[in-house]
Length: 321
Image (cartoon, rainbow, N blue to C red; front, side):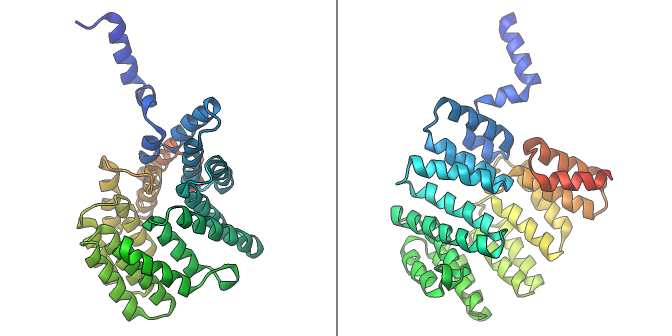
């Protein structure tokens, strides 16, 4: 028979979900989209163990999800300073520098681009077998002007190495190079080769869909997204990315709603597609369809996980006006 004391504890945990979830790790909280709880947990860990590089890296990633670039940069810099030989930490510092650069003025962006290149190249030097690091570096080389170290030839060199590490990613890089050269025939061939090399992965189908959106072949985009959503879901974030692609293309909003609800109802939410962002996108779609009450519920759900997520707050304020 359960004791009165234990019964009280059971009732308390049932009434206070936050208490029941307190034992979750920061990794798990980020995967669940509970970024506020993750930040609180990580700051507590850092107060106790100020030289914990992993906690700073995770804190950086939490701020990255919130698009709080300066706070994230500070945390990522701390992780790198504590473990300068960790390629993963350099990769994340490069990523958040890149996000800030995308939103900066010309002169600030040029300075930040140099930092992105340095961090990505360091990540590859420290982790030469990392297909993820090499793919990020290749993308930088493609997007950055030559004055800050960009170049298609450099991206092509990374693709050659990726042939051995991850052929699917190698084809993706070559597809992006072809797009930059305004060669859609080669680009499509490379994206389809990536699908074959990955045995039909959802992410490879998504990349083909993104190509079709860029060239305005929207019916084919929807077909590729249908393949992505029905493929082996090795990367659950594809569901959210596919929904966002439909939103950006102004197509099949009911289908996008279905993808987001499928993601949110699954037990496979991931850090790469924060649940609070999925709630926000779902709210956006419901608002577009005129269901303001349901949209507001989704915006509130997003803010309950990430109160600093300004896009959801702005949307809720707009509905309340």
